[in-house]
Amino acid sequence: MTVDRDALQASWNRTRGHLNAARVHLTGLPNISLSATHEFLEHNELGLAFDCLVDLGDALDLPLTFWQHLDRAAREMRLYSDALRKPHLTAADLCRRHLTAASEEE
Image 1 (cartoon, rainbow, N blue to C red):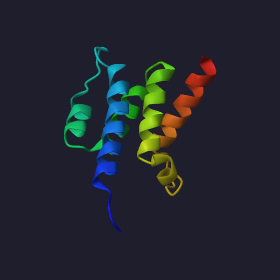
Image 2 (tube, helix red, strand yellow):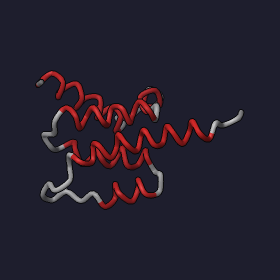
Image 3 (cartoon, one colour):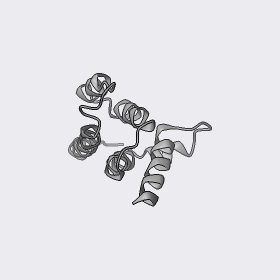
Image 4 (cartoon, helix red, strand yellow):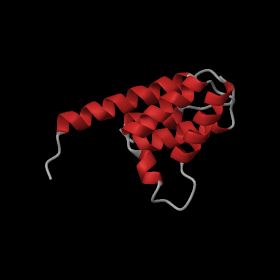
């Protein structure tokens, strides 16, 4: 199987853009450290950055746009299809729940 490096890099760039857009919503909030998320993004650990952002946002009342950015990142990384094969709640599942709840509030 041949990997299209340009397509892969473009996907990573789109995912990183969505994750950074979500991260902006957490910037400057008290008692929120984004250092781990920043480190994951620096090392192209996009799935770990996604998990970290979902975890940070889980207990906060964040706007729909935060969850929409994470939803786009999850779709780009195909996390929803991966979640179907896992017997436990994943960050992608949690993102989808928050996205639904935030959408209903708007």
